[in-house]
Length: 43
Image (cartoon, rainbow, N blue to C red):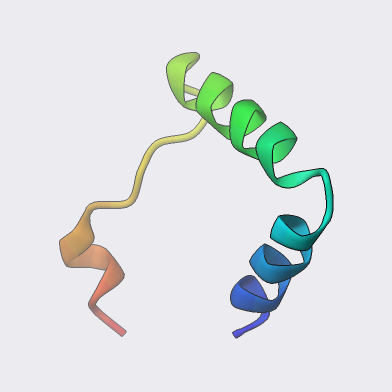
């Protein structure tokens, strides 16, 4: 839930695209990786 609130705040402000770019760059540099859909649905 807190993630959704944060995303809404970012979208309403000017920072969403900046954060998106940073996360994409980190992913390209293998600093972070996407969580597989299967793991996202397991709670």
